[in-house]
Image (cartoon, rainbow, N blue to C red; front, side, top):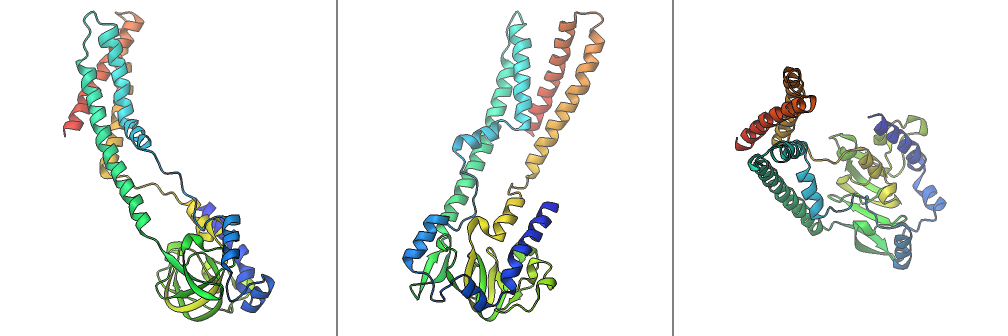
Length: 313
């Protein structure tokens, strides 16, 4: 929470001067053409600064999903049990018995494959859905309106906004007519925020990003009105990118996953308690190694029974 607050304070300082600057002053200071960029200049800036995208982790391969499904805390315990059983039932035994080991390996493989196919299929479906959604923005290029993909918006582009549009980058409003923006994705505010072309606040009065009344932020959307705005920041330089880097994107755990973790913790506690008790009861009449091996074997067999019952249920 402190990191997010620190990021917001830094952003306020970063945007305050731009927000309180008049549209004419901003245009003059940054050599902005109200007719927009030429295609050649836009392509040059795109090559120099890259696409207007928030960097994400690389797409996982199928084996990444499988390894994550295989080496869960619960499966790790079962695999550890299988190794100990191999030592006690095969290496130390005069008549090797593979039955318990096979049962555990089968349980681990079945559970891992089920989770793998479910996770892999859902993520691939989500990726295909993203590819189908191609959101565009209206910009001025060569003095004419042009639709471009959001990722192709560059710094200095003149963006035309209307009701229903998504803000493609961080923008400085130049001209406006009854513009209201929803910023709930960034600030949590449910009410639409009015945006203007000339700030109604002084530098001293600006305390949070909601006070930046001439700035539209990437990731927000237009509720009503229209505007012409200049792109000031794109991609990783936007406020949205800073917030996204602070927020975890991990999926919430399902009730099943929570149950598996609870069972794993229970098995670990059970082993930590049972092994010392059985070891102390046997160490005085058997050799040290024999007593410890027996204690581990007893704990392992009991845990195997609990694990098998859990899978059956």
